[in-house]
Image (tube, rainbow, N blue to C red):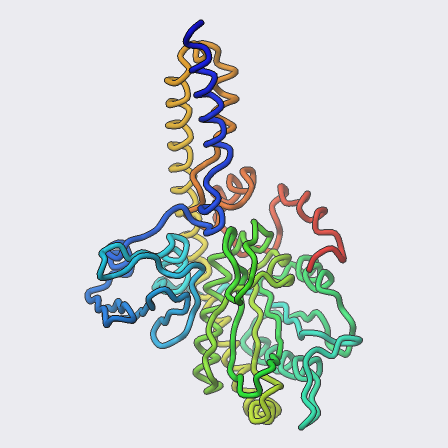
Length: 417
């Protein structure tokens, strides 16, 4: 009897630790980090240089540059944004980046394998419309809803000429809610979703193109003040979102010869609630006079349409290889999580030998123990969804797994931001 209070205390302590992991880990979205040597090995880098501000990895194909304490980084001269700033310091010997960021970089940004272009149905979403003018310019007079429709039509024609199927959320000055746009993509069984927008800022000098994909589970968006998000429907395509966004953005910057504001991450509604890979492109600033004039030029719009098409086609050639790589990674993660679960169950059994003879309580305790905190975006999904993702060999379909039915009900029309 004298040992019972000690065992009871230990029981409640372990239960609390297992069920309520450290708050800081949940907020950063990653309990796993990758060291400088891990990054160098993953990227196959033959050279690594620290200049006091940036850390540059290079090989015979790519140059990747990270900046001390900053989320912004460069790949072959194109700007991207990390989900978390690098931690530690190079001189201190403890520099590292979030495992999620390295996974996305390795699998979605720098993959080599290509195949035949996958036939795709692309839904184009001209932003705003109808009662919603979006941003505007007074000199010259331009409304965002008109310019997005003009650019989307050119992109659609270019994609069609390339042999892809194209559908639209709107082809005229129609009013659509954000929920309606995502619902249309699901009903059309679109393989990709491209939302077209034009920017505006209080600073009249702000200029350039920025491309957005969904923020992975457990991280905040690129914009300052963005809150940490939990798992959303769009997170099932985190790798594909990143590949599509990067494929389009780097070609768009080159063709449009515009300021590169980067591939960014934000939990916009059409990115969160659309279950196929999705991107949102801001083609320029209506608050910038020179940029507004340029965006009205038909030749410039045609270049942008060609760049988006090239990006989509490049994605189509790598989609199958990415499907395979992601499925293999998720299977490895599921196996590692199961080993960890068994380890914790074993530790629990050792801590409570008197209880271990009764199998039912031991199993109940083991099931209450969560898997390791997320090392990949997929790990933020609910348990049932993780099982589906691990077994899946294709993530690009817009047909959501049956286990997501309750989530669709949760996102009732008009309730999303």
